[in-house]
Image 1 (tube, helix red, strand yellow):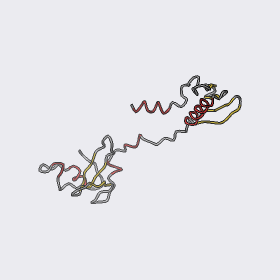
Image 2: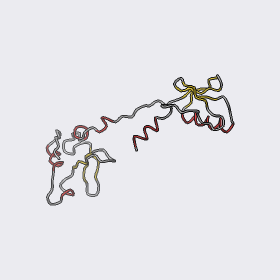
Image 3: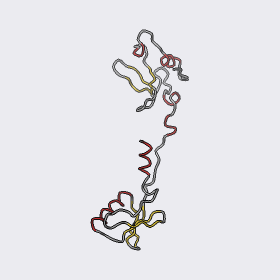
Length: 156
């Protein structure tokens, strides 16, 4: 692999070293590049007798090794702040409050256990009654609390 290190010629020589006698385990090579794998980002390592240490700076000139020389694999990855979805809960005509998915399920269990009548969910203007015998919604509208299912399907 060819490296276009701008820090120094020694680091470039170390990274491009191919030892005919020892191969990968050459004692003369103290700096090595470890490419990205399925479970790990690409990185540079300093090789010691019984260990490898992650190197962020060149041991010869102290130039940065990681930012210029490894493609930025995090460029397309970001932690997104996804607001928690809620639905409006009504008992009869009285607004009770907003409920998350877990809170809605807790309410549905209570409705079933107490055979409570007159409860409903309002989602995107749609009124959905909650069955007092089973705690089930009469229908489950598309888009209501289904983001997790959609995300999990992308992982399968």
